[in-house]
Image 1 (cartoon, rainbow, N blue to C red):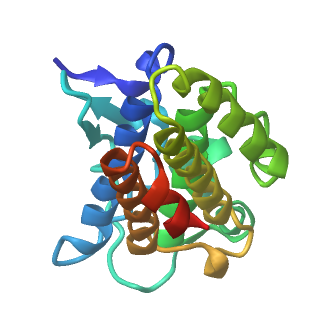
Image 2 (cartoon, rainbow, N blue to C red):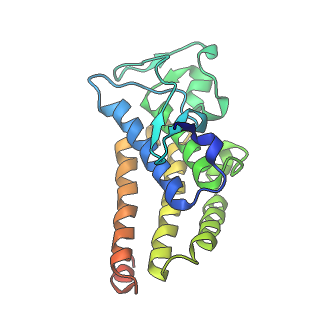
Image 3 (cartoon, helix red, strand yellow):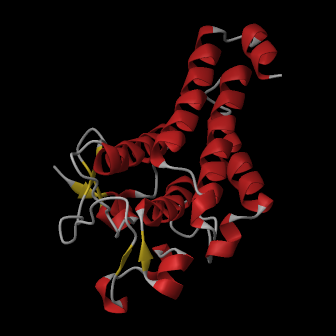
Length: 210
């Protein structure tokens, strides 16, 4: 059974939401780097993320337009649809590059981590407050089922996801990370969680993370 992830926001725990974040990034990496010529999605949003019964995400609705190569392209204003996911260089100059998708990814990550009402405008994503609120929210939800060291590792993963999203929505596209860098940062958080799982008392984890 395939579902739209946007219909499934409420009730999912952190493990599922992170799985969707990571899988979405891997799907975007395949489009950008796994083909003979890169494809830009250009309409990345929760409504275009499908999940199967195992909550494995699939990117949808990218076949309507393929943009190839490194050259920047211009399109007409009515070619794209989801204004809240548009980077400023497209809004102002109709410039398209791989960083278009990265910007949209940042908005998607915030929505997955905080829920569909987690922010009201792009400027909210850049605030320290959203990091603090999201981290504390997930701390409260996870603390009953995690050891102290594992809880801290998960909270660091939440924080890292939001920090990645903040870099993704930089106004200057040249300051945004590429998808390979994003996945590398996510992998680092997974390594910390594996370490915390193997060290429930936190002796090794605390030394490594200090």
